[in-house]
Amino acid sequence: MVRKINLVQGDITQQDTDAIVNAANCSLMGGGGVDGAIHRAGGPEILAECRRIVAKQGRCPTGQAVITSAGNLKAKWVIHTVGPIWRGGNQQEDQLLENAYRNSLQIAQTHSIKSVSFPSISTGAYRFPVERAAAIALATVQQFLTDSTIEEVRFVLFDKATLDVYREELAKILN
Ligand code: ADP
Image 1 (spheres, rainbow, N blue to C red):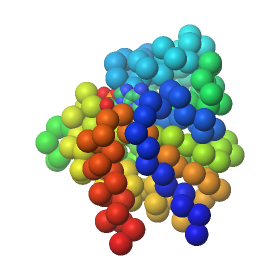
Image 2 (image 1 turned 30 degrees about the vertical axis):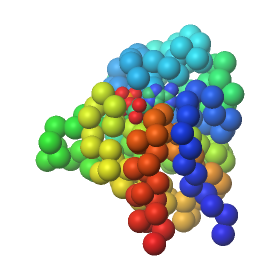
Image 3 (image 1 turned 90 degrees about the vertical axis):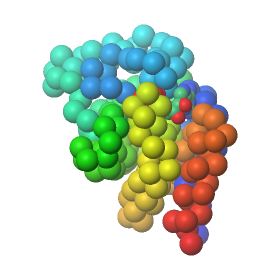
Image 4 (image 1 turned 180 degrees about the vertical axis):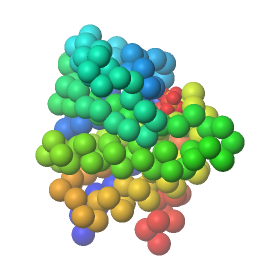
């Protein structure tokens, strides 16, 4: 079987997958962390498209996703999804994080995208515990890929500690 899920340490703005996923916020107007890095590297066209989307359909609810082109990036597409802010675990955070991954993959598949890079959604400024987020992220992706036209999902983890957690959780899922 082809290994469809790959884990790498790196910068998501440098990935050559068809699409990269942005851990955006509901405003879609950019922010810090990975969101800021993607808009800086991709240039103003991405934000212009986000503005058009918000003008047409309003803010992006938590767990949902939208797609734009990728400006100057190597990827062709940026999928912007909004992960949940961690509020202790009783505010449907798990379900909302799962929705963010699944809706991102669904929009990718609809656009015939074959490869997608994800950051570790919600585990930065939104403070979702990383072990718990990794387990949800990997299980959701694994399940989606069992019946999908997507060929590769790459998790691009910014730091070694996060990469190690994703490695451990992936090993659990594969066993
Ligand atoms: P959120 O608000 O969803 O928590 P953040 O951007 O604050 O999003 O953090 C999500 C994760 O993305 C964190 O692990 C952070 O270290 C990581 N990150 C930040 N910049 C990049 C980047 N350029 N490429 C990949 N991951 C990044």
